[in-house]
Amino acid sequence: MRWLLVSILMLGCQSAPQPEPVRSPTPASAPIPAPPPAAPAFDGAWTGVLGGQLHLALTIHGTDGVLDSIDQGAKLPIDHLTITGDKLHFEIAAVNGHFDGTLAGTTIDGSWTQRGVAQPLAFTRGTAVTAGEPTAKPHPHLLDAPVDVAVPKLPTVLKADGRSHLVYEIDVDNDAPLPVVLANLDVKAGPRSLATFDRAALDEMTAIPGHTPAQGDARTEIPAGGRATVFVWVSFDGPTPPKLDHVLAVEVGDAKFTVSAPTIAVAATQPRVIAPPLAGKNWVAANGPSSASGHRRALLAVGGHARISQRFAIDWVQIGDDDKTFTGDETQNASYHAYGQHALAVAAGTVVETKDGIAENVPHKLPTDVTLDTIAGNHVVIDLGNGAFAMWAHLQPGSLKVKVGDKVKPGQVLGLVGNSGNSTEPHLHFQVMDAGSPLGAEGIPYAFPKFSAHKEGEPPRDHAKELPTENEIVSF
Image (cartoon, rainbow, N blue to C red; front, side, top):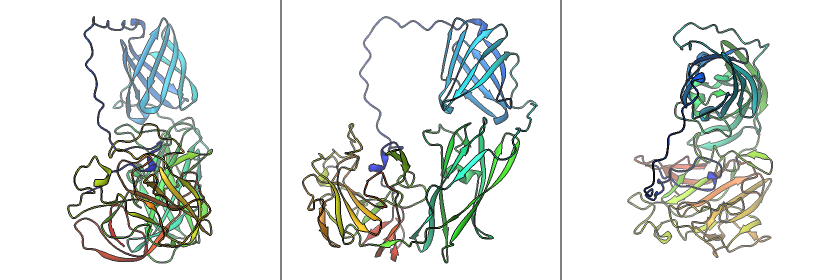
């Protein structure tokens, strides 16, 4: 089973499904008149070419319409279409774009705007070409792949599940006026290939910042002037390679390019071994380390820079013999096994930030007024030295045992596990990062000296100097 809960990662990220709001009955009233039909002059089929390369077919019927991107084989329903005199405006939410044009005889002259970038676009009345019909598809006039590839943070090594894992991100900027498709990525250590990701794999590990894809959208298609973030997770055995090379294959229309990205170094530091932040058994590493964990994908802009402070964070919930996180009334925080458990210092250090006095939530009801100041709830941040900071979040109000400037020892009680801030049930959100800001930092790997862990339905295994992976059940 999976334990679904909201922790601090949810600011600006996809949240757990919420129930539909209850809607009040609509009072009886006179029927609302239907909008006036569009001017017949716009009805019918239109064709156009965007950027001199991308062939489009527009079909309008009244206030409905569809835009067919012929070269891409994609039909895009129009979400909102309005006609005012000789003016046409329509929007397509799926690609975050809109068109504005003016009718002039058999032509609609205007511009297409997508993600803030406007390009001239004219439609001419004519029979729409369908994807099954032959279409002239000239190669884009490009000297090389129109992408800028960068790794914003050096790869770091995580030890988990008996293997080593390189965890990092690749940013790909599209500098072309046409979409760029990521087709393949090969991660190499010298001549040896560590991992190869085809388009299907890349679709699962890529996001377009600021864009929530609709059903069926290809996340590997970077819009004109847009950017994609590829969340890389490479697992391997043996020694850590000192550097990596990346060979990226991209497609722009019919043109195909291979990009050899600059060689990057692998961070030489090994995960810091610290004591666990909790004691006892049956702790579930919810949203824990994995390629697809919500924490791992929580790229948030704070202070003018996007970071992933929660890259290796874990939401610790505790379960009973029935695999449930509570016993009794699930609307009461005290019913949860994690509630009131001791949050423990993981190493010697100095307290650099505390927050107290934030009221607790009713389980499974998120607060509606979360801010950057309250998202972590009642929390403690400790400087562990050598550029590492740890945070314990969502503690009970009034339970903190330390204040800023205090020196702590491993195993010292810092506070009690609660349900404050951006949290849906009592649990401890714990992370290690390279700065003292809960979100304005980069998450760094760490490890526990020893623990026993298992996935549901599997026997426990002993681990040393590793982290558990997502949803493993852990005993310290």
